[in-house]
Amino acid sequence: MLTFGIDWDDVIAPLNDRAIEMANEEYDFDPPLTIEDITSWENTGRASVIKKYYNDPRLYDRQVVPQESKDFIRRLQTKGIVYIVTAAYPEYMTRRMEQIREAFPDFPGENIIMGVHKSMVNVDITLDDGPKNILKSNARFPVLMRKPWNRDLTGLLAVNNFGEFFTLLDQIKSSMIEDRVEAHRPAIIALVGPSGTNKNRITRELTRRDEFIMPRAYTTKEVNDGIHTQITMEEFVRDRASFIETTMYAGYAYGTKMEDITALMQLDRYIVMPIDLSGAIAMKRHYPTVIIFCKSSRERMIGSILEKDMTNREKTLRLISLENELKNSALCDYVVNTGKEDAIARILDICGVA
Figure 1 (cartoon, one colour):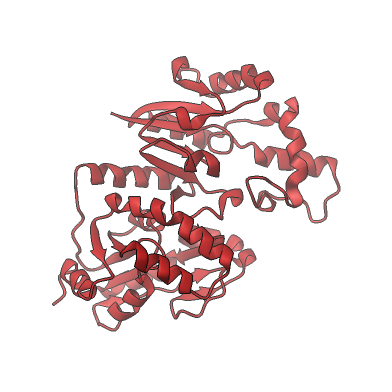
Figure 2: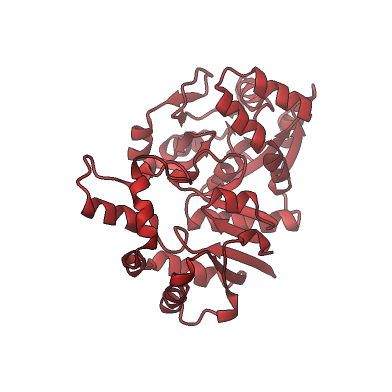
């Protein structure tokens, strides 16, 4: 039976949202603060004023658990053993326990774990919004709950909501029993893997064939790769509801719109997409999706990253993410070494294309 370690603050119960509300009530911000203003885990930006509310008991009185979180925990309890893992100031531990009891009166008390050293908790799958907690986790599958303050973190399993988490859980279970998805048109062919594995080049080569087509993709990064359309972060946030999947990579937002995919699915072709694993798994919620993990030698991947026309900061983030991304191959339907000459032939064979 699977075990789950679920974070409390900003996963089960919103904390920073309530702190933002308190700051806007006390200060005359123009424009008002939003959750998007918390741009890092250290919170050194415009919203740094909210730190003072973390020691304010009024904040914890406002921290009400939404119904969707209650439904999430109850549903997850049907999948395995659930632990609520939470860090709380010593003076607020009693209040935190009361919060949990109020929201989940039947939750086992022995499954509530309080402490700052979350890495010491051994579970199969953990869900947390804290970058350090995820990077140090001993869980078999650490999963990041995407928030504005962890956008720079790349190469990890990440979800934007509870629905995506359950889809990821299904993918994890499938990988455990080696339940591989077979390719049949129309379907999504999701090319995932670390930076430097030539996913964009392979996508372009495949789409030269009639059997494959590439959807429009959007990003906040300034690009000229023939695959992505650049939009501003304001446009990305405004149109978020129209995206079927979104992800953050090296601080940039990426996404695909549902209307684009739905239209292409009518053409009885393979829709090939270079995408991260979390985005590919999100696609599985709506369309038949075959996930192909692209790998190459470490030397080739590192060299490709270093040669890319990007900032040193972005190169650093991609290099840091490399090892974490390589671990994701176990969750994919197929693995293809894109550093070999027969990579395209291998993908065509997977898709049953002569």
